[in-house]
Image (cartoon, rainbow, N blue to C red; front, side, top):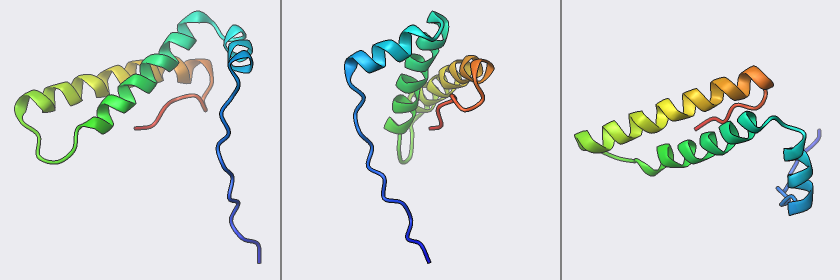
Length: 82
């Protein structure tokens, strides 16, 4: 029986991230940033929400969906999940 892998995320050096980013079209990079920001915004809302918070959460979900649509068009494994 094998034990589950215990992979630890390792930060990517800035130069490597820049090299990876230089291989992607600008609109895909922007969509990746937008999706990451929108996902963080979605996670910010917890518990019972007032009407204004619900509207802000829906706005963040819409932004995430738009960015994910661009990412999925470029590569099926790129979309960000909230």
